[in-house]
Image (cartoon, rainbow, N blue to C red; front, side):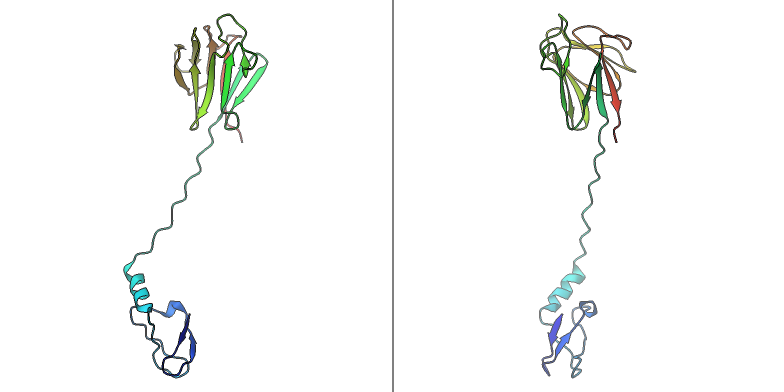
Length: 174
């Protein structure tokens, strides 16, 4: 910082680290008279009174959820952040097409929301699902969170060994 001496007019270059307290005692490099820091007293007092602000906390990166893999016969579909919704049904445009009498055109869908996977039934015959470690259940116009590997039967009952089941797997991708 540049401070001109009021006595001799000499241009003093003063390191701000040397300025302490409300009345700093720094002599002029030319004549030795004490330099006057107009306006700096307020700045020095403010620095003493105010506590330094803490640095903002860095947000932790949210861990990526494992990908959900759906297998039906030769069809394998990956549900993840780049494909957060997969539709299941009888209609050709579905991601997983199941051609059976009890399966609706768009029977159900699986969706990734806030890092978790949900199965939603929107059919007339319901969607049966069984997750490992739980009991088999039929959804009727309801949504359930998928938390473990298992099987889905759109409109019909299935178990882990059923060849016509849609198999649910979780896989951590790198």
